[in-house]
Image (cartoon, rainbow, N blue to C red; front, top):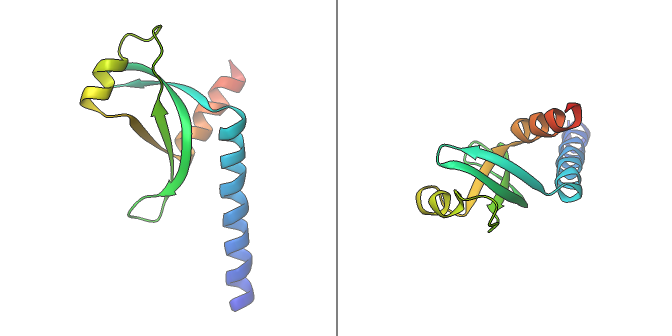
Length: 96
């Protein structure tokens, strides 16, 4: 049983590292928030209260995106996405 738990833990750690590597290689995303479109940079990987993998993105000050001030005021500097949302975004970018 302990060997199985170790294999599962290693598999999860490998998956988390793979997602973190993808985000580090392509750290920027344009995110259409309820307050407008903002340019975000990957910040870190974490877990929510349900122990689900969450990726933290931080909004970047970019004069091209006029909604940045509004987004910071109403949503804050950080935006959190699930691993599935990030993978979906990268898949969409790759197929565009």
